Image (cartoon, rainbow, N blue to C red):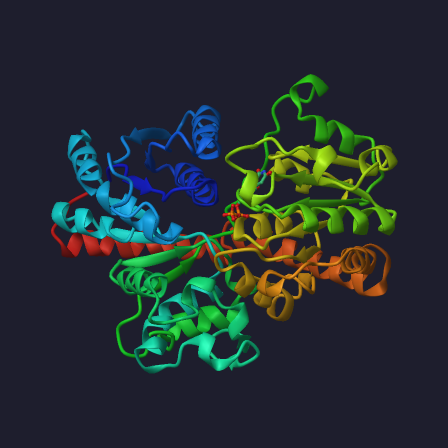
Amino acid sequence: MKRKTFVLFPSLGVGHLNPMVELAKHLRRHGLGVVVAVIDPRDDDATSADATARLAAANPSITFRILPAPATASPDPGAHRVRRSLDTLRLANPVLLEFLRSLPAAVDALLLDMFCVDALDVAAELAIPAYFFFPSPASALAVFLHLPHYYANGTSFREMGKAALLRFPGIPPIRTVDMMATMQDKESETAKIRLYQFKRMMEGKGVLVNSFDWLEPKAMKALAAGVCVPDKPSPRVYCIGPLVDAGNKVGSGAERRHACLVWLDAQPRRSVVFLSFGSQGAFPAAQMKEIARGLESSGHRFLWVVRSPPEEQTTSPEPDLERLLPAGFLERTKDRGMVVKNWAPQAEVVQHEAVGVFVTHCGWNSTLEAIMSALPMICWPLYAEQAMNKVIMVEEMNIAVPLDGYEEGGLVKAEEVEAKVMLVMETEEGRKLREKLVETRDMALDAVKEGGSSEVAFDEFMRDLEKSSLENGVCS
Ligand code: UDP
């Protein structure tokens, strides 16, 4: 049988590129041919450009092809980020088509990020089977696939009041305020574009999810039973994860490691509070001061990734720490704290034995990275589906505790930061949380080993693909 070749098409942004590259590595480990086709990040997205270059250099066995970005990113530059992403990706269809036609070998499947729904048209034109790769939890997939059905008749979340509980198949009751901001008003432009996205995701041949069955049994049961999409055939869902960055183990000399890793080496085991908020998370100056005060009064060690406030990001991408943090804070905490500007090697940080708790925005890559390091989390969701992830992480998975106060643009007070840090680092509840994380990490390791649920699901995916190729008369 000839070696199968997959083309992976991530959407824009590091949070989507990173897991797609992990999927690429997974396919390579199974002896498959892989090409990752990345739309050239624009000049204003240095983080993605850096990440693409770094990932390509670190993974020579994977072919990366940079496709030219469409001349116009979006017909409406003032539109919401989700609209602009979908527009850019749709406008890239001709480039993707030309690229796929230029490949010397036939492509066996196109694996699309969840935002690349319009690439289904390219796949159809070339008669290539298209699957989605979902870099968020299966619980979020259960909600996304259900929303077109719900909103066909349901009331806008915004009209229901923020404490109203929604009961969707496969997930715990969820308050409307924890649903995505883009979906609050069903007549809004953002809700319409997302409903279009979710409906098109059902047109794929299936969905590969970066999670594992044990972690989300209720969501997986609902997805498998088809109850999330009651009015249509549900796509087949395969939980093949966790696929996470194992960190860069090359170069043990201090000169080759990031300064924060060297600093962590000098801290006691499980003593450090790590704060990092994904590829985009940033806070207003007033909130940064509250965080700083909370960390200081907790008395614990900390490693904090800080960005300029949202309104200063274009004018001052380098945060001015002296101005943004309380007077004297850096000096007073210099023996037990480190502030890193903009970006830390998170995959390595979370694995470091000095780290004891992770204050996270609940992005799914960050969550999986923490799970694989058995690291308890404190949830501070900021955007996208992160508040929904928080509900699942706290109520279903029992792997995190939530912070109070951030909702609807509110400030999380210093006292709250201090209280939650103390709770995880010093109390019996924190000890139990850590135990749960160890169990979860062990189950994750079981899932990805030979014969584990994620490997079995991956084999099923390969068999289903083979079957559909044969049905379509493609020989391999
Ligand atoms: N990340 C990192 N350093 C940082 C911030 C983020 O390496 O300072 C990585 C992190 O390890 C994760 C990804 O960027 O792999 C962020 O993905 P996630 O899904 O957590 O959040 P998103 O950026 O999509 O909101």
